[in-house]
Image (cartoon, rainbow, N blue to C red; front, side, top):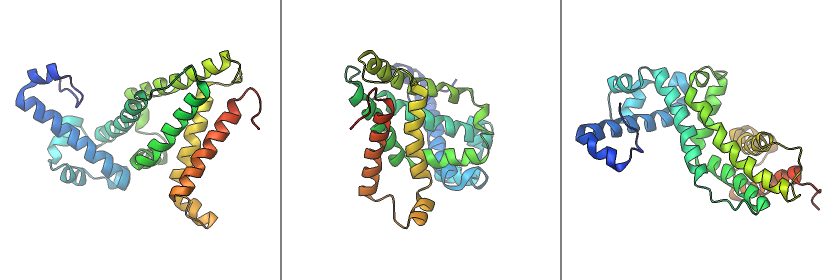
Length: 225
């Protein structure tokens, strides 16, 4: 079984040069696939384009991923995995639930801005009505850690009498994610509709602050003034 790019050093030593080369090739193909699929969609993201960008060969795509669809599903799994790994690095002070919740909101908003491929690839999959992502068992695992972080923050806020007791981590997580996702995924049509570019540095900062305000007002036990 070929190990992933995060294989522990001890295991890497046992793989040898050929094994490490296989890891690098697979990772390079996956990286190229994310870029190509997020740019051209599933239909336009040909194996030829992916192998060319990865400086590899089409046959290697089929060797490691079985098919174009297998590679596409792997690409979706990978962007979720990367998101979770970045989220896991958050250093939250649960004893300060207000600040911790703001930190979660800041992270999600910032991550979406830094990783447009996350949004465009998911947009493409939504156009397919989740046809491919629904076949992935791995993807379903990635929502639990993300929501559990918010759950811990909310529990602390509830215990301190700061947050409402009738709110759930799932709802708050979706609130944060939807405000950031909708804004960026529709940035071009919204800019045309509103007659202003909504992705300037100032506008992005303003929306981030607005997200904070909405989230805190939603969870607050007492209305904020």
